[in-house]
Length: 614
Figure (cartoon, rainbow, N blue to C red):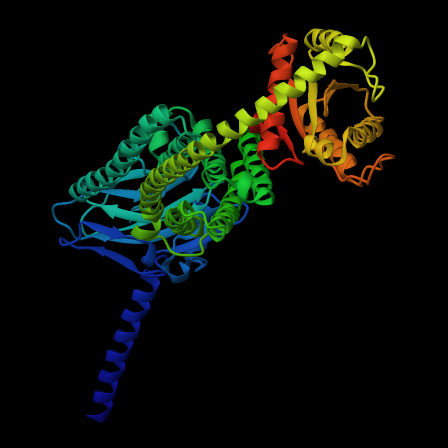
């Protein structure tokens, strides 16, 4: 009896062990487990349930991959994350699927990443029959089973039969295999919702584009132009990243489908850096930062050119890293503008934070650092839409601030203008008296001034007319300096004309010394006023010479043989004649004289140009 019971127990144990062994043997090719599609299943994400193999040489065929699968070489995805970043070779993914859905034999396998180059789907049935389909950006868009922005494959899954799916991806872009199985009805609903969301996003962008286009056409503010450039370029970036460019713009051009991403990213960052420069006024507020931004623009121009010739797998990681660096730099310049009390920069930073978050998330997904979810996949759209909205508000706020500032400046200018008119009238009367006296002296002289030994006004007119003609013929600028000694009448009244004459002679000597390095025409124009012509000299160089003259006059007191030493200063007006804009000598003298009056009106002992006096 005991022996019978023992034999019965052994038989039961052997039967159990045999069953376990059969189960283990049957499950060897399905290392990640068998996926059961039930009647309640309408969509199924395969990533958490698949095994993968990295074929570093990209040389394995289906048979090679199948042998590796049977040998247990496939491993589960780390953390279920289907993104491997930028890698060489090819990746194989395996899943065993059993369809228990009685009404759904046809399923759609979708890779929810649109930028893969080469995709191969192998379906192995229990009888050993293998079906193969190819896809990816390396094939024309029409090769896809269904016209949709994501690569997709139709599968025939018989009910109750285990089917092995081997999926191979090889690409120069980020290696990603986010595979999802859909019933036709579920896919129709998904594509409808996705297209609606994308349509809403581009609807927002188009509305903002045309709104700001009208503002740019009316206001002609460069900030609006570069905003439009940025919004258009970034819209193109997302159009390419979402696979819509390949679907709608170049469905037969696989080369452009490969190059469009780094090209559009380069354009978008050129627009963003330039917009930040203009909007924040970096040239005035932070010249060093402005130069760095210009270098960044030049770098992205180089990236855009290189994208045409350099392989995608080389240029795209470089551009993606440059995007992260640019995001940090634009944040830095925004903070710098805020610290310089530029109020619109706060809105700029807020909008940029939205874009920065979305772009950083997308880039980290591309490198496989964070998993791909709905929010990480579409975070860049959400962030960029909010960025565009806030930037539009920031532009409006900036324009309102500038308009308020202009109104304040105009109001203050009107008050100052009334004061200057009265002051100018007094100065004109005084100047007219002095010019009358100078004219009477010039009529009695021929070529040289008797007091200072300089050229007189008559000679100056003749010589200046020839120089002005040469300026227009040679197409080279000519600068005119009007120098007037400050409060010279008071010197005459207080110390006498002999002291004044000594001061004039000393001033003439000092001006002459300052002009020795220059090929200048120097004459006494009248009274305490001197005129200098600098041929082939632009405005910047002329202002430097004028400052030298002004400092030379006021550097030390003028020694007089007829009285005390006298401290004197001078006001200088500068005007540069641009070739072809002025051929009348009197017009040039009048403009320079106005600059001189501006110097006197601004406190004397200073240099003013015809531009600042305008």
